[in-house]
Image (cartoon, rainbow, N blue to C red):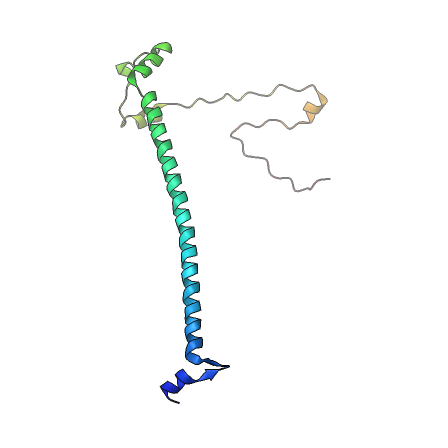
Amino acid sequence: MSFMELFNRRVRGFRVVEVVGLGLLLTLVTSVYLAKTFAGRERQEIARIQQEIDDEAVRKRLLEAEVAHLEQPRRIEQLARMMQLQPIAPDREITEDALIDVARRRELPRAPVTAAPEATDVMAADAPEPLPEDAPPPPPSSGGPR
């Protein structure tokens, strides 16, 4: 079978070349349609994200304007006067390097351990005695619920 016979061969009244050409044409049309559909979806997604970026930029500008207003020295000074705040005394200031020494010297307050008053009530008498904070927890009971 020669190459020219392939072009002239017929299948159910159609030449093989015409069937192959029609198949290729349908494949190309379908692929172009799908590519345009996907591109349209991507374009919509890009537009949505761009709108979100623009909205966030507007919000950022509003927040920056609010911060600029709140940080105005005149406003802060007026608030300090209203609250009767005074400047920090020089002997109360400390450097960053000395902060750890201050933290080490500071003693944490401890609550005194006092004995619980004796209960006269019947329900209070059945309650377990309170344990000091540093005592080990009682061992778990081996019996199940009765």
